[in-house]
Every structure is written in structure tokens, then in C-alpha cells.
Length: 146
Image (tube, rainbow, N blue to C red; front, side):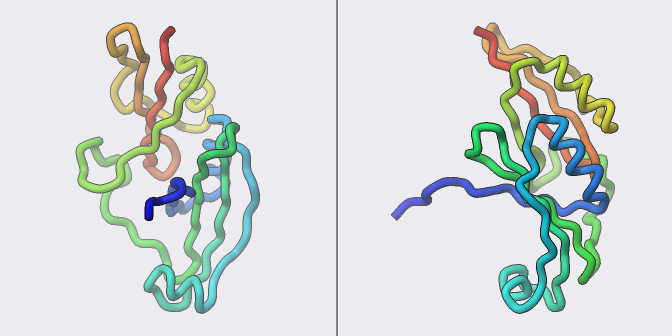
């Protein structure tokens, strides 16, 4: 048996509104928001007394999603500084294909995004960059050339 698809990537945030605005500006669509908690949430997370707000956003092609979660209880904990370098162990970015990388970066800057490094070009194939958005989230952008 094999997996069917990747359903979503989960990101715990402190400022839900800022995170939603960032991903909507990127081009994702807000599917909905809800509050979750109770036995099933406790069982899935291995935590007791879970209560959190969630927001589900999807890509325009409807194949990929990001689930944002804001924990009310137990309180979210920080593993360290939010502006960690790219080489920290663990999940470090989500990559999106875009059609205008410079325009996308400019739009995301209005939501506090900043380049992690600089805009780079890989041969004649791609223009690439990483931006750091709200909550220290690193998002990769790739514009295919030709």
C-alpha cells in the first residue's frame, strides 16, 4: 500500500490573522476556520486539554493545503529564536511555484516578509529565493524560466 497524496502541512502560529494575510497575499485561498479541541484532538496530538483555532488554506490548483493552528491550551511553546538560519534541523520551509518571483516578493514585503538571502538564478531553469514571513516561517519561491 502507498500513500494517496500529501494532504497538508501544519504550522503553529501566534498571530493567526497575520499568517492568514501572508498566505492569502501569496495566492492561497482561505477554505475556512474553526476551533478544535476535545478527546480526538488530545489523542492525535498527545497533549491534554487541547483547544486551538485552525485555518485551512489551499493552493489555487486545489492540490495542496496549509493548516495554521493557534494554540490556546496548552499554550504554544517556542523551540528557540524565530529567525533561525536555514540549516536548523527539522522542517525549515514550504516551497511554492510562482509566475512572477519579484512581484511576489514585493507583495509579501507589505506583510513583513524579508529575503533570507537574495534572489538567485539556477542555470537557465529557475529563479529562486527564500523569504521569512510572520512567525519566522520560511517560504521558498521558485519561478520556472522557459
